[in-house]
Image (cartoon, rainbow, N blue to C red):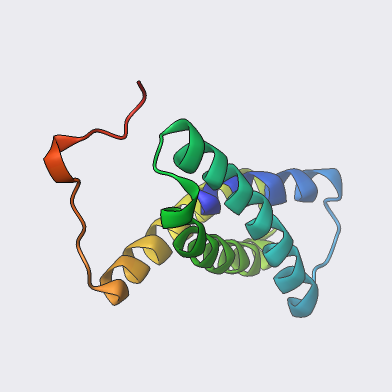
Length: 119
């Protein structure tokens, strides 16, 4: 989710200024800023709307959002194809999320069959 949000926002930036060149340090700063925006969206959607709560997801979502966003911007910036930025972000975000899940090594299941889906 964070990669897709970042890709969308960065693609809009690239459409607005098609000749803009992002040096690596500026791309990283842009990725951090967009990652924080994506983190807030994730907290609202997953934490509040889907009732997972803010405490359990805040730190993992922040790490995931920042890593996915910075990598998305660093990959999408030199390509300069704004229409692909969302897809790049979704791919990068999926890979980052899967990697972080494997590194965490814990599998948590919902006790008692509770669903955190839309109610």
